[in-house]
Length: 107
Image 1 (tube, one colour):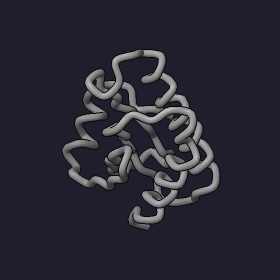
Image 2 (cartoon, rainbow, N blue to C red; image 1 turned 135 degrees about the vertical axis):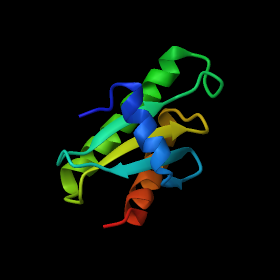
Image 3 (cartoon, rainbow, N blue to C red; image 1 turned 135 degrees about the horizontal axis):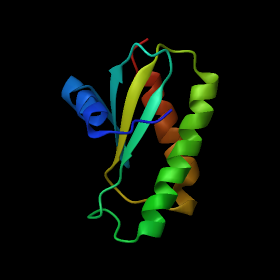
């Protein structure tokens, strides 16, 4: 599932829990739905081309889909904010960064 409207994003940002890596920030907030939900923030100031912004979203969605399938943690709402652009050659490095962030999440 994904976060859709601005109220859902605002709730996660106002919870003020954040983890960071070299390429992204991971904001999180527990939810009562029973499923993890995911939203993305990819600013134009980071990457001007929509094609590359969409690639970043797609690749992160794929990484998170695999993690959500494996993890049986309590359900959270996540907002991923990109702080540095990445592309195809950085995919494995990014996957390792996301894995490390998930290890830091509270159980």
